Amino acid sequence: MKKLIFILLVLSNAAYAQYEEFKIDALVTPQRTGTIITVGGEQADIHGFSNESIQLAVDALPVEGGTVKLRAGTFELKDAVRLRSNVNLIGSGPTTILKRAEGFKSRLIDDADYAELKLMVEDASGFEPGMSVQIWDEPQSSCWNVSAGTITDIQENVLYIDNYLIRDYRADKDGWVSNAGSGVLVKDAENVLVSNLVIDGNKEHNERTDGCNGGGVAIIKSKNVTVDNVHVKDFNGEGITWQITENVLVQNCEIEGSGNIGLHPGTGSPKSRILNNNVHHNTVDGMFICWRVHHSLVKNNQFHHNGRHGICTGHKDTDVVFEDNHIFENGSDGINLRDENSRNSPHGNTFKNNLVENNGQNGEGYGFAVHSTPEDLVIKDNTIRDTGKGTQIAGVFLREVVPKVTLEGNTISGHPEGKVIVK
Image (tube, rainbow, N blue to C red; front, side):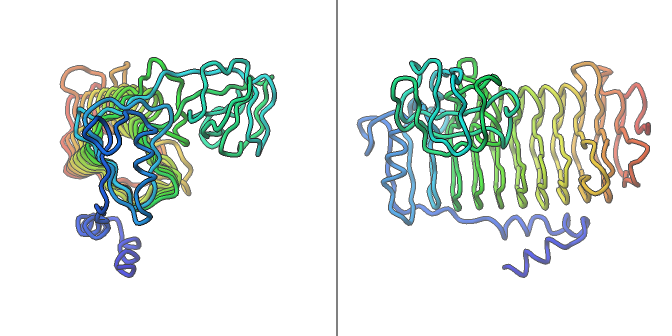
């Protein structure tokens, strides 16, 4: 097996596309069943409808893992459900809803320093032990600069948390603490399944959750994780995010109404497989492929009615196959290859048999917009069209510095500025 994977990783883009289906089959990890604990209602092993009830079931599974089966009902989440290795979390379909509790935030009134475990806040009335928190200030308000943890105790207006702070947060630099957090968190784990449930982010009543630390489903420093048939809606942050991972499969999911990005694979996440998802009406991009996502497959998805791009990819995101996707009526470009220098551009990507239409709903956009300088970019057998709305102003936009692109077999029509333009 190791030899096979090594060979696949060094194949040319064309050979990679040829063997992609076999590679996917080879990397699927069977999910274990073992012990089953049910949660939710009088007929379940654990009666409650809260993240504490679900967590009690997860923690009660034997060390070799097992399955937590959620009954129908709405489970209130004051903190994320935290999954460990070899655990399956399986709902009962659309009637199993994990809903974030009401949000709360307060200003810091004293600096919260690197490696501290306490936070002095202006108002502690809306916090309670067991509740998730995120900590930031104005200069350090996104991604890996944000600290996250869980409250362990409260003494007057001092919150004690379980994770060391990763930065110095200044009270005089607009320092804040909120109870934002994930729906389901998979961290430092492997062989995990999340399936057959709804995550309601309660967006209107919650602060933004930072996407490098959390999401409707957040997968961090983990491998062999499957998210299947999960509906993430109205999460104030990113619908499904996976960072520093290997072999993540997201399939048959619906992600809508996120306050940021729908899908966010990134920070070195090879062998991602994104299949048969419906990603729509998210505030920014349908999918933002972040840094170093490579040797992956994006197939049979719909990306539509998102605020900016349908798909956005860039920094060292190489050897990805995008096939049979429908990308339509997004705010700006259907597919955007971000501006990167020649070393960091998304090399070796293939776009095949996609339908890209009527993007640029915010005024104007392109079917494909290539702002970086990728080598071995293939755009083949796609249908790229504007059907009379005039918002997708050209089929393919290429910067003058873009190396040779393989453009063949595409059907391009209806664009005010032409099929392929170079500027």
